[in-house]
Length: 215
Image 1 (cartoon, rainbow, N blue to C red):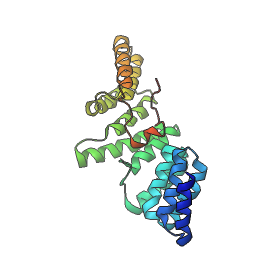
Image 2 (cartoon, one colour):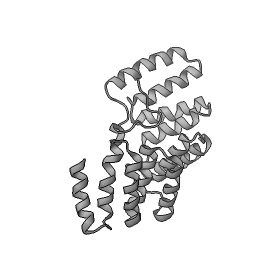
Image 3 (cartoon, rainbow, N blue to C red):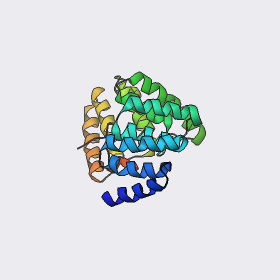
């Protein structure tokens, strides 16, 4: 870390307006969970190259720092600037919906996931299995067990051994008094988790994702 920062500081002495240098200074602090320290530097990156780094800062706020209201503000600005495009393999709307989910605004999250998934299915033929999982979670949190089950099944059709989805599907089965199915699926989910079939997002090695199961 010290050598890394010293090299970047040397570059910034030559030109302090290079946004990439500020982003590189921020990155290791986020991975070390020193969010406030890193945010000072990523703010500088956004200052000097807003188009390139605003979505990155929004992602950091959503997944790392977990400042969800600020994340929503940044992502909405991103959409206004360039439309609902992608950061870290997921749409801006996905991250907004995920932020609302974490703020317990489940109806808002559900509505945004529904729209975003519909657009993905229209463009690509299917939505990302993680979007479907969280869409199911937004319904699960509102006690819509059958509807949540439907979305979890759609997610599992794409990622059939995703243990976290299996876990929440099992909880829905329990709520629907399908106890034998619940018990069997929990056993399967734990086996798949032990085999490593959980979140495979690149940043999952640094951060626990919302609703990620810790066995």
